Length: 251
Image (cartoon, rainbow, N blue to C red; front, side, top):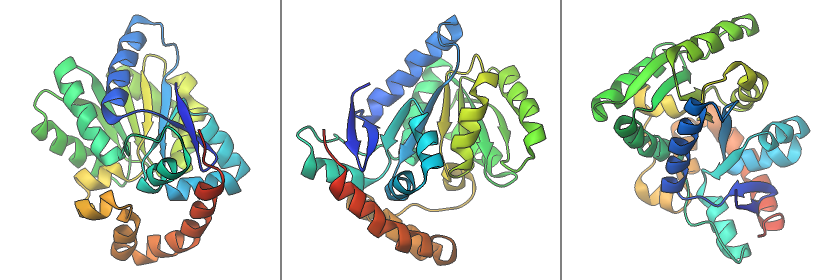
């Protein structure tokens, strides 16, 4: 896997279509029994960069993932300024889900959605099934459970025949779940962390206008929409992320 160091993190040099093609290839490997444990795929934005450089436990979890893609335009901008071979594009998880669903509907790849509030993942699954005829979301579950329930949840995922487990529980809970429990998910090709993804398709949360996404200002839109939950977080993490993007980015 070719990577660039962006803000101190190893970020995959992949386009969205290449990542989707890798999902298809790994599904074939898992079904053939040559991919023994699922590949962990996660993403990075400014807040992840800040936490990665300040929190040793979180850094360990991110480093334990197999693929980290760039889900923030500031990472792409930093690579353009400081790398000889910059990242080609941002892989926004909200957009990548649509790429993945297109291939999944065509090639019979099965999804399981785990996370968010009760009912949200199920509504997201219903929305995507209607948008992509033939898409199989073979199970959903909300993200509120005790540690004792985890073995049963993993058994349910395996029994469903899911190829890709999408986990939308927020950081660091989703990364911890993926690392601690991948050994219970044999037969699954990918564990794909996805933060608040289900809220966009099943919880009524809107995305920023295209121009704000393209200019790296989606964080500002989100902070304005949820100032209590996100405003302070972005106010604190953005300067930290900028510092590490400026000082720890290279080929």
